[in-house]
Amino acid sequence: MNDELRRAAEKVFPELAAGIEIDWTDVDEPDLRWPDGTRLDTWRENYPYDTRMSRDEYDPTKRKLQIELLKLQYWVADTGQRLVIVFEGRDAAGKGGTIKRFTEHLDPRGARVVALAKPGERERGEWYFQRYVRHLPTAGEIVLFDRSWYNRAGVERVMGYCTDEQYDRFIEQAPVFERMLVDDGVLLVKLWFSVSQAEQRTRFLVRQLDPVRRWKLSPTDIEALARWDAYTTAKVAMFRATDTVRAPWTVVKSNDKRRARLEAMRSVLARFDYTEKDPAVVGTPDPRIVGAAATLLEAGEDDTTLSPTPIEPAHKPQPGLHPEADPVSTRFS
Image (cartoon, rainbow, N blue to C red; front, side, top):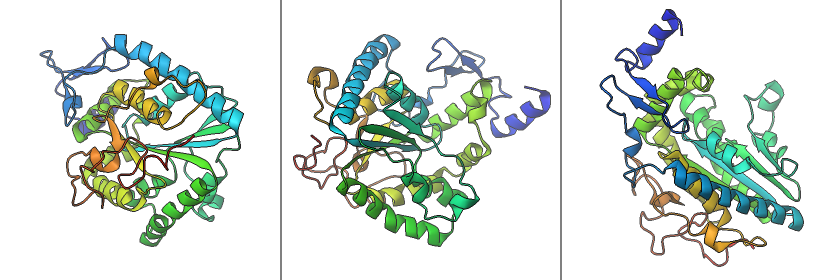
């Protein structure tokens, strides 16, 4: 990094001028350390575990769950299912890394990732959902959306990239659009990756320090640091309007990336009765890490602002179930 770029970066991240550096002992989960060796443990913020998952535990568990994902893919292909998995969350919440682990061993002929760029002139003149409809799966296919139509409820809303009228129309139409998908037989899974404010900043700082990750740090990301509360408000409004019985949100607490990846896999696998499923491997999703939208909260998200559903619903729903849903009637098989 040349001197001019470094000075510009230090205005956003004064930690750079203070001498903070990356500890690459764990390449997958690098630490930031101050000159005296003190570690910046922001991942602990509002997190239910005292230690991050070790690679010795993570690697073999990931492999077993990836084998189950392959079984799920075979089932989708053999039975002609159409599976859509939406990955959403704040910037640096771990969506991309999780998608990479989901698809690492899947057959690319039957599973694809959709990560759409900024809409072109023609797309801006279309019905908002039209560009996403083009990428929906055909029979026997899995599509993973790395961000989705919910761009309008998040970054477009906060950054002023859409009008109030466009936003209001989206909030009204999104549940209808999703109900149409589900009623037509599409298996729709919506995952929201939840990262705490301090940990998001740390991940942006890692991107600034690491030359191979610096491309991930966009001006919009930098702006997100100053608009945390606005994004929280947008997230709350989005959940209130779109966390429905037919298309519920599943929240994944992602301050520990490894736990988040594994529990996201479990939460998808647990809801389908696919052929040769191994219940001992899939297990039960950890409710401290993954669950219904109203049960896993970050700072500023409480029972009066988040959702019309209670914080502690009577039967504590599994991932993929809305607190008001019937667990039996909503199971995929």
